[in-house]
View (tube, rainbow, N blue to C red):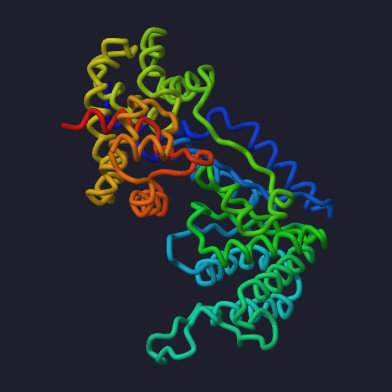
Amino acid sequence: MDPIRNPFAPGAGQRPPELAGRMRELQAFEVVLERVARGRPERSLMLTGLRGVGKTVLLGELRSKAIKHGWGAGKIEARPDTELRRPLSAALHRAIRDLAVRHRAPDRVEQVLGVLKAFALRANKPDAKLRDRWQPGIDVPAAQGRADSGDIEIDLVELFTEVAELAADVGTGVALLIDEIQDLLPEDVSALCAACHELSQSGAPLVVVGAGLPHVPAVLSASKSYSERLFRYARIDRLEREDADLAVMAPIEREDAGIEPEALDALFDASGGYPYFIQAYGKAAWDAAPADPITVKDVHVAAPEAESELAVGFFGSRYERATPAEREYLLAMAELTQGRDEAAGTADVAVYLGRKPSSLSPARDSLMKKGLVYSAERGHIAFTVPHFGHYLLGRD
């Protein structure tokens, strides 16, 4: 069929496959927005799951919902070894601008912007030369004595309080959305938990919505023992069969086309219900189909093309980041699990490689830092990428 009309191409369609089957999360967030805006206590939200299940797309949809409700909203993506202060400043600057259009007191908005600027400027090292000092692009004087101590935990509490009070002035709230939250520095995780704890105590209208890998709860609890009381965790997993079929049929039907039931079976088997894979196999099947409707033969013909694309863009890009020692560890995991999406015992990996467990710790820790594996439970390790073991076993 016409590749120009391909509804599975990136950016095509009104609702990507990643949002199929996510109505529970979307509706729950609506409730959070209403409760917080009315001064009711509510926990912040953490979305956890493997890569390819649509956490980032869902996070973007939640941001859109917050804005539609008149909230201020800012979104950042955490990066390894990068301090939170600078990207957080940019995100909250955006949120304050959202609120400013509804606020009737420009002086009050400027006051909060001054506190934000003071917070942001502490991202500069004290000994940094003038030409190397970062400027946050906030056209008001920096406030003094508020959110500028240099202690991220103290400053974040004070900044969140100021921004939340500004939102309360207009009867709404602020949503701060953080993707890849497991990549935050330990001190920033601690500060974030402390700030959320303070906000929960005061009922301030600011919520944090984080998204990250399955071990995010362990990262948070290692930082603050009370973190489990601060957040509501939502596990984002692969789609159930009904939702997976909807993710395929809805975009096809929007193009006034069809797909045979046997082709739906084949697409589900190939994708495993993971939204990213649904999009990849769906796109390839559409391009391979000579006529409407898409048939099971079209899916089988298209599968190698989809797998080739995934091998380069989804699996290969991650595999290339691993060192030879790390690749040895990954392949051992794949061999032990026979390519299934299961956890492998760290002791079993050591036995398989004929090494002492302690000698493999550097490779394992580096793979965790790179986001290729995570600690599924004590003594076990698993891939963060679905079907990664199968990919590794299929390499030449």
